[in-house]
Image (cartoon, rainbow, N blue to C red; front, top):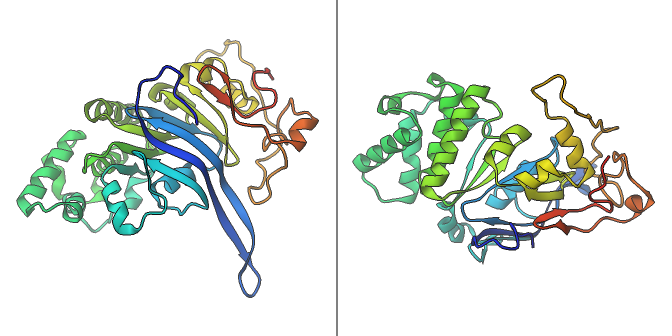
Length: 333
């Protein structure tokens, strides 16, 4: 298991053990399974109470699939999801209801998750209709409180989704996610579709809500600058595999996996004269339906050796609280 650090005194909220998610590839007249897309491959980690854990990697690396699998939106192929010391991956629908209040998700496109013909007040009231015994008056009052909590006003209660800006719609998505007082929220590219100035406002809102309600975030993003500002630790994924995990300070100042080094080298610098070496990876991301043998990154790694092609590296602690899966962890490209 991965620890925040050997000296941490935080309690573990969520634990993943060997999580896998494969999607079947069907073909032929009888639509038989001919192979699998290995979207997530043996992910194990801990998420602590009050922590913000970032997940980064190229498109197609399995970030969003992992988030959806944790919440049960995708059925696991293998592995365990343990929330508050209880395995939840195999629970039946009725048994999972008690966890719904504590585990929520903020989606990348809030407009797509809202009914364009339904007023916002009514949409938010549905949460309380499904999970509480509130009267109509109580539900309306609770929704207005939610709108105020995320920086909107009572007058927005009667408006439709198309009458809001992108930033306002994302605030509505946040309001819906925190309506039942959860302890764990997955932010799936929650600010990637917003302008930079609006991003800052939404991130500040998420931070304030975390402090107020002791929320734990799984923050999925491709924007390393945002992750550096917002998160406590960062998990780097490649082709469904975890390749590096560490605190923000350790990972950004001393990346020990070649893939992480390449990702960080692509971050724009404020000065044109900044001493910066851009690491350009050769080739495309391998097909997850037919991943390479050995280390999944060896086909694009500048320092790959014969052992990388034949043997998959183990996930191990290289430094205090800093983990990686690489035969040559710490070597600079």
